Length: 152
Image 1 (cartoon, rainbow, N blue to C red):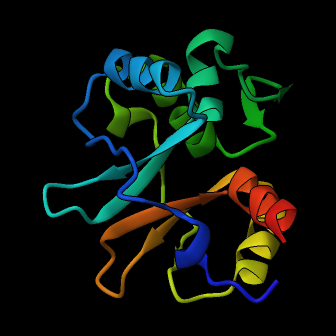
Image 2 (cartoon, rainbow, N blue to C red):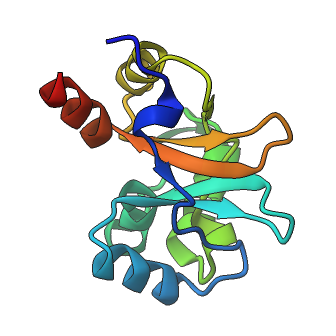
């Protein structure tokens, strides 16, 4: 398959802003049968992605990091910064508090093979498609790639 991402992506995907209330983003995901959405700022620049896995923190909660006690000292066996970030996600009320920032992206002129490799290697189900300025122009999913394979 020698197609480009632009040929099979969904153009102008639904997006949300960081200040969007979480309940509104969840409604959008459910109503449109989506597993994630690009998060953009007022200039349509990609700032993150919100996905079902980001939302799982809301229900599953956060496990405290493992620690050991030596005398009267507590020694944490994991990074406390990560624990604090997880708590923030579990308690978040807006998309910006829960989203994954620094999402993996692809450009429209890239090949579908590269998109498939990224999706596989990073164990993600969607890639925001951005232009050279970082504006969201589309989204490509595993489903888009499978449909393109079936059409050949």
